[in-house]
Length: 309
Ligand code: RIB
Image 1 (tube, helix red, strand yellow):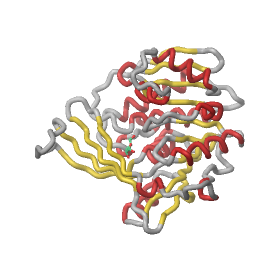
Image 2 (tube, rainbow, N blue to C red; image 1 turned 90 degrees about the vertical axis):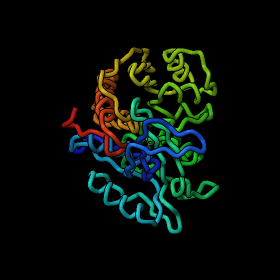
Image 3 (cartoon, helix red, strand yellow; image 1 turned 30 degrees about the vertical axis):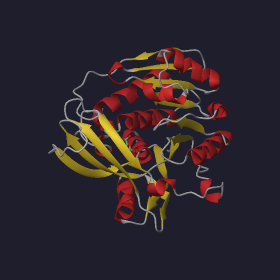
Image 4 (tube, rainbow, N blue to C red; image 1 turned 180 degrees about the horizontal axis):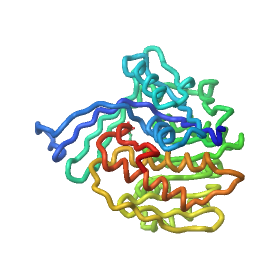
């Protein structure tokens, strides 16, 4: 029996991942540790995280754009292999598939990402039928910000007004219009995103204070601020708040840890029965999943399966 349906509306990229002992200076040539390519994009990573972390009773679909290049063709096969419904991914003529250049430092596992949007941004300038991306059958709809902001905002409002649970992961961070928060059920962001979205990248507010501020802006269910190795803080509209500790693990690559977390949490939301939901338990599940991903190299390649947890 299908318990829940998740739709992820977002980016599909191909990642070019360089591991290096350090980032070279301007004008310097440096021999690096390794280079790999793989599928990625915050949207597709989150869809894959949902598919890998769910049991058979959760169905996952991906909605977004790829180009009509070799990458675009291969992407459909990759999503199908994960059991993800890719029938609403558009292959756009004359467009290149989005790419991300990712530099990962050997010692810290920290990443730097340069994103070229390509097909992900190929939408008409003014609202049109192609802006309508929310599938009727979805229960939980997951968004990030690697699509044009106006398109994301349009779909968040539509999803919310048609009764879906909207999970927003505002990455890469951008200031959101104040009236957007009323359409968001769950807001998942890291600490720097929480400050940037608040319009104050040097905010002195604590994560706990920021979480409450976002609830006051209108977030309907919960705000989660992830703190890397320090775990996370959360606050719910029902007045519950707390912390979840991070797992102590050997970090080799933090790429897609946030995507794994968001996917893991979305799966728990999709399995919610009769409105019953234990936020803390769901956050612990997502934290465990993210802790597995940082122990492996790559983006999509590092996302764990339910059986790995
Ligand atoms: O969150 C990681 C992802 O961000 C990478 O897969 C890359 O494509 C960028 O979009």
